[in-house]
Amino acid sequence: MGQSYFCDYCGCFMKSDLNVRKLHNNGISHTVAKYRYMRRFEDAAKILAEERLKNPCQRYSKGILPVRSVLQLWSIIVIRSPRSGKS
Ligand SMILES: [Zn+2]
Image 1: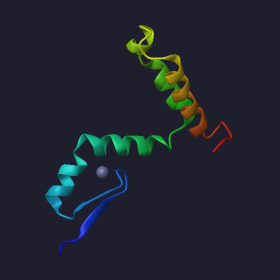
Image 2: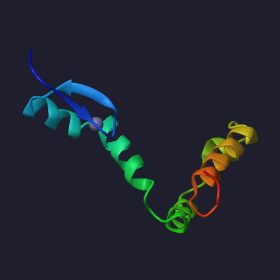
Image 3: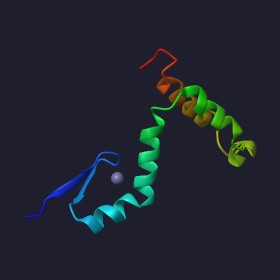
């Protein structure tokens, strides 16, 4: 039986083969998972400044996205912020 490789960013096992690992590491799901993981260690003020530079969500502007969803996303950001004093 071959050995398996565990990706810490994605939390999944795969065959420990060079080509399989290269393919996985170049995939979009791994890239997004790695970006999100590394984003945890950035300064909250820097993340907020970057988010403010983004264009507003068109679905929210048109009223398609309910306000409650936006507030839930905001509470997640605040709870994860190291400056908020919460866990
Ligand atoms: Zn991965």
